[in-house]
Image (tube, rainbow, N blue to C red; front, top):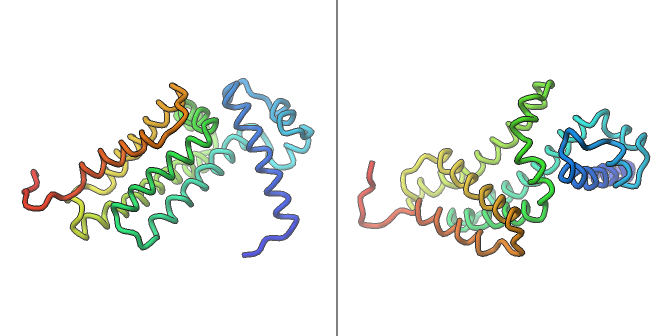
Length: 210
């Protein structure tokens, strides 16, 4: 669907605010960050920020949703491709880590504050919406694992449990990359891929342990 110039300009301005907000939230945390600081970072007036977001809570929630939506779109594109399950898992891991590594500020504000913020969030619908987005990412990966089990290339594993495990491996790796300020992520990503695929791949001629 083609967007109008006004809609593109509005989305562009929101992206500018998101880019400024993630830096301020990452530096000061949600509680200490102010809309004034975000406006200054974005080189906009405070009033211009409030034209797009009614409050700091709304801006923070929208920031999370924006980044989760982009990540979900990356995963979905791979899942719906015609590639074999092994290749899909490989590409999904590389794309997720690449995306999160390129958006380290988002990871640093979302990961430590996610549980506390979502717990305190008064708007139940907003909290459930964010949790649903996270769940949908896991469901997409579970689809790939199910494809692998049904085609006989993966063991008869629980797709959803396996997807949660894979996500845990990815997020712990990203946390380590940020903490230790590593300059590259490829070696770590390949290690995750190797460990996960070797764990789920079906070995011909060997009975599975139930």
